[in-house]
Image (cartoon, rainbow, N blue to C red; front, side):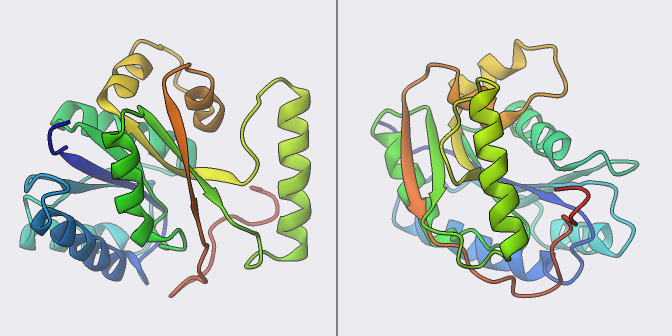
Length: 222
């Protein structure tokens, strides 16, 4: 398979404390993969500011001015929620162009060193690569309990999503093209991509503590 053009898409909401360090680190990861000819030189990062009311967009704009080929972004006029920001990111990179895209959280708790593993699974012929966290050691008791309830409820409702799969995943251009055929704008992406029937594999990863700031998911939103 040809060396793929990779996009990384990141939903952001009030992430002024970490968005610059996250982009800097991810550019380092991309540069390393480019130097080793694992991805093409025009691979890039695409951020979606989900209506932040802090300096997140100003920081993203500065990053784009310094790295116009590497950092691209769009801003919502208000907060629409994480799933819609993820969908907008996937739609955005499809329009710009890429062979595959990985969605990753702005706090970089998901292991960015696993990105290479995702790309290699794509090169092995997988259109969807799902990230599965190894454990929930970094979660509070409340979050562990609600997560367990969530997966059980989803399975009861017929959404057979893998346990401990978040929105850390790779999808191919083919999967993006299929998604574009759906008019629904409130897709549940974890269930949607798992049920597409495209060739799928899994990458296990460790979850880190946040380097700065705090989670934007409070008990009510969870």
